[in-house]
View 1 (cartoon, rainbow, N blue to C red):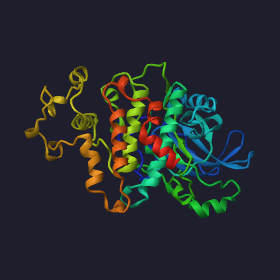
View 2 (view 1 turned 90 degrees about the vertical axis):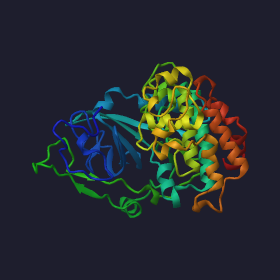
View 3 (view 1 turned 135 degrees about the horizontal axis):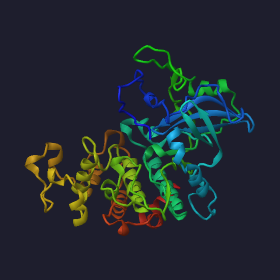
View 4 (view 1 turned 120 degrees about the horizontal axis):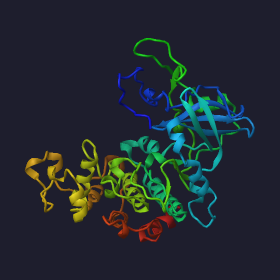
Length: 417
């Protein structure tokens, strides 16, 4: 993959906030998409930018044949060589309707290749969704979702995960930025009306440090993503789980995991084989973030060792094989699991068990939620969910189907689905 930060001769372009890494416009990297460009035999006209990631940029386009707006994900050339995202989406979308995730996976409408100065890029076309749950959460005071939305999201994510796992698939990248709400249908809007709601694209000139002219490998300007929070959304039964670029089949052995470090299971952080149980671990950590404005496990750096420390601090000493495999455990713990309090900074000294982390919601709720606390039944249900999902032995964790049968999830399904 294209490196995101290290280049032999230093950065080429002046940095810009809130856009993709401009240094990745090089061989194997991003395709230089320009507004108003036409793609796939002049079917799709690019009209705005929706977002970006390490291995893709995502654009709003007008489908001139179907007369609707679509989302086009342009993969980097290197990612395009190995991607199976279309295959995974196809598997999920062709599954039997009895699988409960069917409404939670965005349909793949089209796919095509484009050849550009940086290589050949796979392009995936799907329906346009609203803001991610992460963006929505950050729009509220203190980064806290209203409880009703948090509970609805928990139910829908549980259903989505159960359905994906029922297809013998592993998602591999569950977090709040990969969950998005359905927005209102604006296919009938003329482009000026779209710009009136989302704002016209903001273009920022790309400039080289050496002041030389730009080559064809980079666009003349970077585009800030549209503010999808300006669209009306429907946080009911309309959650979609995104980005199947890191998905795999359960029959395949894998050790690489794409989920952010703070959400990774110990087996992933320690380089062992990972599968559906690691999805379940990430699910639990993500649910915690739905109800709190902090992560369940948050290292100060963070790096893998910080997260491993946080996990042990909350859940206790690892089994012997993992304990021996954790190379830098000696910086935090004695061999018997006793914390090296004298050698640690204040942030690391105070033990915060799982119960303590949950109890924080009870004893000192953020100001934004004084009138909207989780009640004792919800707190007990959340603790049970986390306990069952965060067992060290992957074989002992609940399955995604088991999650749907937990009493608390059953209650949420009755009242918030």
